[in-house]
Image (cartoon, rainbow, N blue to C red):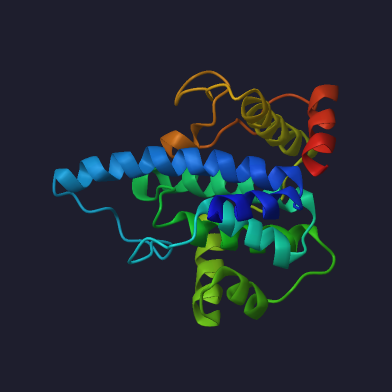
Length: 219
C-alpha cells in the first residue's frame, strides 16, 4: 500500500523526480551491500555530517516525492542537484558514499543548493528543514558543509546540463522498457556507483537529443 501511495505522489511530480529517485535507489542498494561487507570486516565508514546514526524509515522514492510536493522548485533543479552530488562525490573520493545513511541528507541539501542557484523565488532554510525532517541548525550546517565540499562550484554549463539530462533519459528508458540498467563501470552507466561523477564536464556541445531529453524529463 505504501508503495502505491509513493507511485501516486510521483505521478504528479516532474518525470525527472521519479527517474532520479530510481537511479539513487540503485546506487544506495549497491553501496549498502558494499557497506555490509565492510561491517563484516569490522571496518567503520568514515564520519560525515551527512551520515545519519540510524537508517531513516522513509524510502528514497517517498522522500523525493515529498521534496517535489513541498519544495515547489523547477524540474531543472533536480538535474542540477544531480550534478552537484556528482561533484561532491568526485571531490570526496571514497570518504563519502550514497547509501541508506547518507542519501536523504545529501538529497535535501543538494536540492536546496540547486534551488537557491537556479530559481528566482525559493523557500528559506527553515522551510527546507521541515520538508527534509531535520532541524534548522542541521540544515544550515549541511548546507555550509556541502558548499565547501563542492568548492562553491555551483555553475552548470548548458553542455554539462545536457549530458546529465541524457544520463537521466537513459535511466528513464530502462525503467519504461523494464530492462536492466547498465552495470557499474560499464560505458554510459552512472558511476555514482563508484563514488565518482557520471560524466566528464569537458565533453562536447549539447546535441539535439540531449535537448530533447530535457523536455521529456520536465514533462
